[in-house]
Length: 149
Image 1: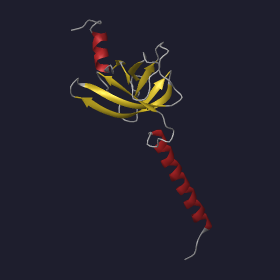
Image 2: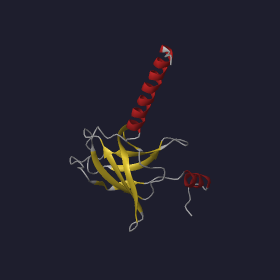
Image 3: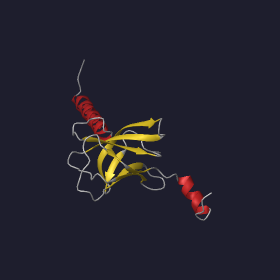
Image 4: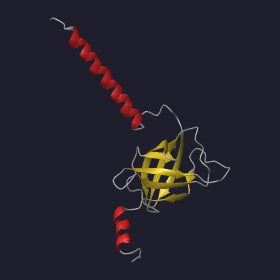
């Protein structure tokens, strides 16, 4: 069987590209956790749009990723677990807010830092949370003139 050097070079380039894509996908989805970090939790009334892999942002910069979600059947709230970068310390009076990137954009969890000099440690829970606001409910409030039913 005769070998063509061009075919071998193109095949090698395709293989390198595929491996690069897999490494990028693993890093972007949080599958590879080589960077370390510490875990926090928060309970939301509504975590609509949030799922495992959703970004955690502070001042618009990604500082972590949602690593787990479950429903607390006693309180009927969404329990969210997330991992933050080790070098980012969060004051213990901070808030976690489910936010949207725009009308048609994705959802992320925004950390709104408090003013405390004490910081949340490994496994701590953010007490002050604000759940997702549905687009339909906002439109209905706007149409009805802001009156609640």
